[in-house]
Image 1 (cartoon, one colour):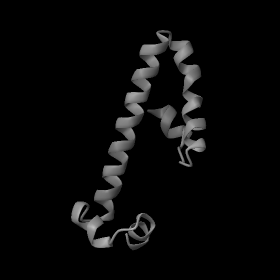
Image 2: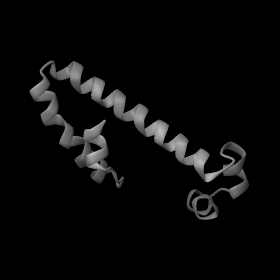
Image 3: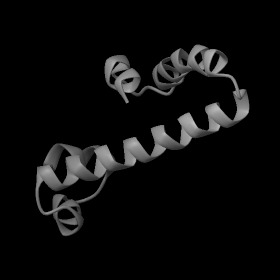
Image 4: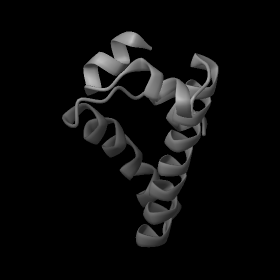
Amino acid sequence: MRELAAEVGIKAASIYHHFPSKVDLAAAITGRYWQDTKAWLKDVANAEGDATAALRKYPETVRMSLENGNRLCLGSFLGA
């Protein structure tokens, strides 16, 4: 938590104020990740209207993630 706080320029106590433990922080990150992914999948499904075309869009998520400096597990994404 100290390393994370230093990385974003705040005190570790500020993180612990909102997330009492690493488990709480991980759960919040995972929840947010799932919300964002679910919204993106819904947008793709609505925009494409065709399951095959929508499926072809999924690899774009990995590309976007890498371009943004994030790491995304393709297996987890496709499993969702």
